[in-house]
Image (cartoon, rainbow, N blue to C red):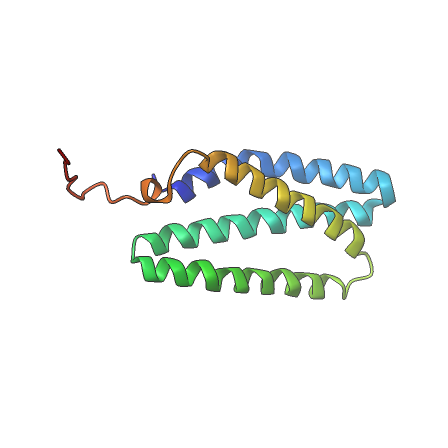
Length: 139
């Protein structure tokens, strides 16, 4: 299994409970609108992660150049999507930008920490090695 898909599999069970906890915390601190805004931020972080990981997994099957382009270009596209989501939600009366950002930033940092932990000790060459390639034996 591709390492990106493995990370999605390992992280996915945590998204719903974290979204619920964010909703509860936001609601307790500043009302239901803040709760929904915080829960949406968690959904945005999770969906952003799934889109990024899935696109990298697909790109890795094509070529290193495509992998690089998707990694770099995908970052720009994903940041644009987050800005667009914020712009669209700010058109509503209930959206709390403060609650959204207060959930988005720690969730992103936590997700990055989990990704680093899952990948620690593994070299990039090991992650994307071709299982069909012949291994050279050195004396």
